[in-house]
Amino acid sequence: MSEAVVANRYADALFQLADENNNAETLITELAVVKDAFQANKKLIQILNHPKISESDKMNMIDEVFGECRKDIIHTIKLLVTRHRIENIIEIINQVTEIYNEANGIAVANVYSVRELTETERENIANSLKQQLKKKEVKLNNIIDPSVLGGLKIRVGNTIYDGTISGKLNQMRHNIGTSAI
Image (cartoon, rainbow, N blue to C red):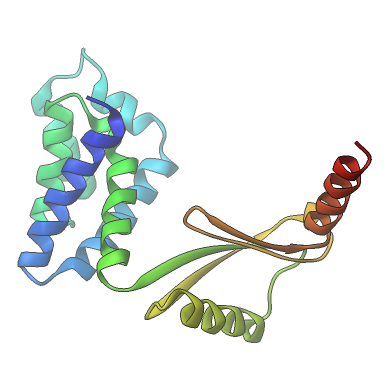
């Protein structure tokens, strides 16, 4: 079974449980903390996968590290360890977040610019995308990328809106190359 299918099954189950209990927002908040913990400590997955560490020691460690989290999150982490799938934890969290965003009309946009956007620029871009995408909310991630030269490149899911100078130059280069044939 592919890793994406596995991650999606766990994510669906975790989200449905939280949705039934009307605490999906809390789930997303706590999963962000879990994700940060795994990303900040890359050895955590190695430890939880290590064959010489007993399963009871792994379970105790999970309780100690994630004891403040909801029981369904702790149970999911333990289940992933028991089934030797803990390396999927980040992808599962990403999938739960996507499911939550879709269910709540939220879009996440990566905005590439040559400099940090002002709060007004961020609000204008978010409002424009909200209308265009017909979403309740748009969360922006501003990514500084000097290669854009100027303008903006916005990625929402698999769609890219390229209004950068470098994008226009590449398009001109492509058009000149094809018209010379």
